[in-house]
Image (cartoon, rainbow, N blue to C red; front, top):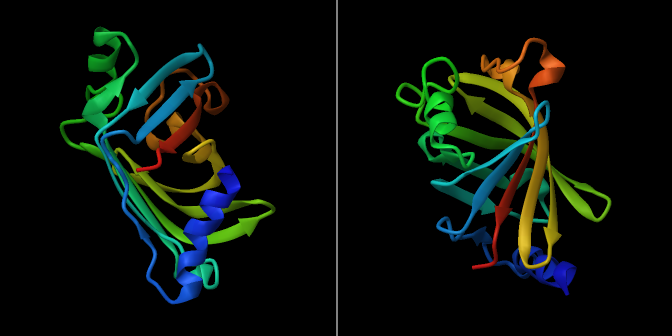
Length: 169
């Protein structure tokens, strides 16, 4: 059923209709795990658009942003510290942004390659895209230190697993 819904969503463009997926941004979220110390959190305040055309993946585009000020680790002091100049600098850089440059088929799933901008620094990243239940889920791994956010010394100790969940509207 999961793959059927996703497949139907992707087949609409084949019928000649434009397929822009409108997202329920109130329920979409970014969850993350800072792996060095298993710190978990979420980011809300998401805006996004997804335009998929499986017959012409080259014309497909995914764009999204999340509010840095909406970071929630379950600890108010840590949240405030993460939003400070030392880390995300939410006052100067209020959003994190992703824009795809290409979308390709990867087995039963899709891969969205593009740029992620955090704290004014833009890096190439790849998200896997698949259906999990009724949700469209994007996953990737980034290193906070690549974006001048060094929580620990050394790149490997700044590894962050990221999961973007877009619930069915």
